[in-house]
Length: 611
Image (cartoon, rainbow, N blue to C red; front, side):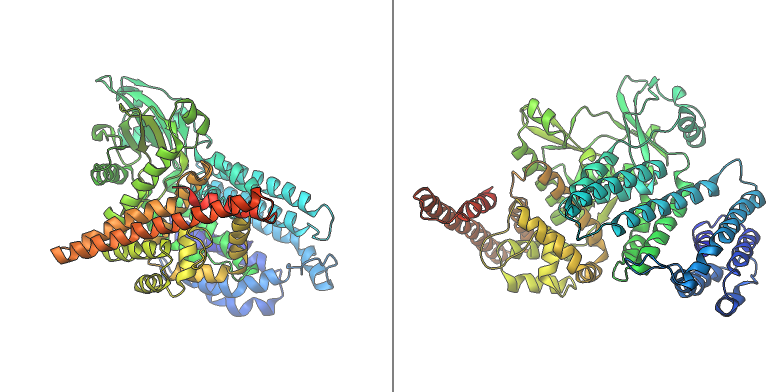
């Protein structure tokens, strides 16, 4: 634990003065001297002396002290699975726990007093969130460790543990806030892999975060505008209408009488962002120590730059205007207007929107808005971004998409929260269009060619990562609705071929990481609605249309037209053959000449037949 504190202070709390880091380090190393000296003197001796503002110190500590030495420290306390009788060596280690706890307590107390930050609790809060996260991870691990697979009630007990673990995760994310909320939202989106206890529980993180006080809101306005909200707006309601991962949204009225939504960042978020990301990386490193194949650290480090941009609301305002310009061709999409006179780095003022969350199915149906129409427009909207403009919304979860009735009576989509975006260069978009089209047409040769252009070796695994469903080249088209067998298959793939999936993700262009997140989140919304629209087909039609931009001559146009007609004919042919086969099985089933499994086959065909 002391090593983790050293790692945390040197790498993720850059504002700590050099002499304060030395003080904490010496305290931690003193605590570690409880271990046999032979294992400490070698790797630790070089770090007892530091020079002021030594930039390399943090890197040396991380590479040598943390990576090389922590395994030898943890190995003393690590018990084999199902072994409940510690050896004499482990017993000695357990006896040292009180002394180590005292050392940790002295270290934390010392740094707080020495740094003079007791009143602000900045570092104390970060340490608290770290320890809370570590506690939750330990309790969840212990819960699963204690399950007995041979118990007759194993399945029942497993569901109980799933729910208990999900509740613990939810509580931890809510208490920690900030980046933890975003991580929890990511877990909620993979509802085809994680147990439903997790996804349904963590879905509450989309807009049910803990609100902050009136004083915190005023603190942000004082720092950014030099005055309180009451002096900027005609009316300002301090009761938040939504509380998300990095900000709260309040309803206000401008001097002109225009109602607006005011997005106010949490007052301490920018201070704690680096330390929270560091905590998550540390926890990841701990998990990776025990499970070698678990390696998401490179993703966390790659997306750090994008996450930092999300903290700048001026950047988000620019994203809003660019998105509105890109999607103006789609008349069923509305992007709220930005009020720049009332916008700063941590405060964003937008047009107020009255709408229904896309996840509120009951209210949508009560308003007589058609789910099929909504989903088709949803897939078209993000297809336009992914395949055509290349400016892709990276966080389109259900709370960021509103639906309202247009004057025509049809559904109009309102896209919110534009803080996190990714840009796809033209060459990546072109290859992605070709890959998507080839996958839907089951053209394996073209799939492999397009995947290779993207630098990906295993085109089949890449297809399953993008489509988040089993891909079968022979026998049947791409499905729109996953049955129980498909979900079990995807869960097995995630477990058994984890390293292969990670390898595929690493091979992908880094620009595509957030695109995969977009696809997965949108797929989750479609599944929430019952998969009433064939998402792969709709997106493939859009991708095929976007391929036309590569042809700039008459000959090129006719080449594209032929390709377009062939594409539509292929889809019609698949659908016609499937309908004939479905009719044949129906007749046999009615006559009692088909086996009981025919009913399952018919249901599966019905899932594939949705437009």
